[in-house]
Length: 452
Image 1 (tube, rainbow, N blue to C red):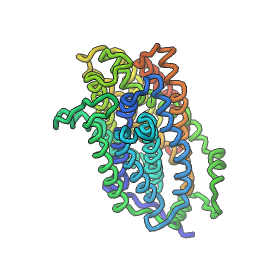
Image 2: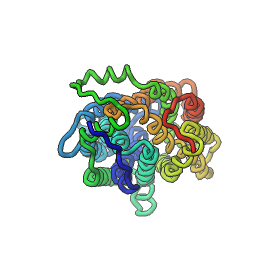
Image 3: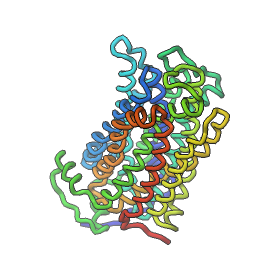
Image 4: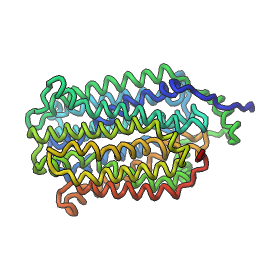
């Protein structure tokens, strides 16, 4: 077999192939910042929020390995990964349109259950679209460009998340759209935000699909041979997913502990920030879900989530430089520590007059978020056979979804019984766990880590 080396891509080629991530993350940010608020509007109690959020990681755990496996085996006129980008984007857009309009289906089911169902559809769809993007970076880029590739993805994720997080606040404060609605109804500013997010999601995915060419299976085999990988032709079956899981590289197993601490912490932040700040900063009761102050707190959560995503977008492009100087593991450890300190500091903010300080807390969280979205994948990619890139990127998602499921099952009862309903302490605990992740990453083997 003739061998050849993967060509280096220009910055704008890398940008184009990851551009769809901007739209995906815009929709994901709208979900993360507002799903708890919407579910509370429909009647969910604070201690039950994590149970509703369980649908997200469970669907991700199921969907990503399957999508990874079948995208490895797919080749048609759209390529290998692009068919999944497009189908996932269409389904996610439908979920974004329907979720804030759940009360219109109340004649058939309670709005709360319809809203939870839309949360499941959205998250499954985001996973269908997201997983192949990770594999595409490894498919297209030579080893020395992968940190840059994942960093560009992180930059676009940050930009999309900033727009998605700030959109409800901007629509209200710049365009005067009301942020208050009748009891049990989602405010108009939030509905419009979800509609806009759906449109941008589809548009950015179409951009990536039309501007990016994928390598054929024959080209990928030649690239693998040049890297010293033995390419074996064999009939692949669904059962191979379980074999691949059992034979996962040791680096993936070591990263699993890092991911557990990191994503358990992130899940706590996404689920409990709105009720935590409504109680701890705005002084509201757990049952106050339709007042102007509650909606102000909900909109401000979008603001600070936008801040951490903006920091992540800006910091992402510094990651390759820092990693080249101190190594990928140390870079990730430092960044996770800063994120943990940022989360823990939120307990010190106790009144609406101090709310601007929450943006300072989010600086550390944003640095950690940039690192979480890039460094584990850059470390992992070098340990995975190219022909298994999709399925192993999907299996790696297990280490993202499993901690969220554990948190979803136990997080609510912990808040209720150990924190006596004070959700702010879930954020403090999240900070501690993120620092534990920083310690654990130092023990990961990264065979491609190059320090200049």
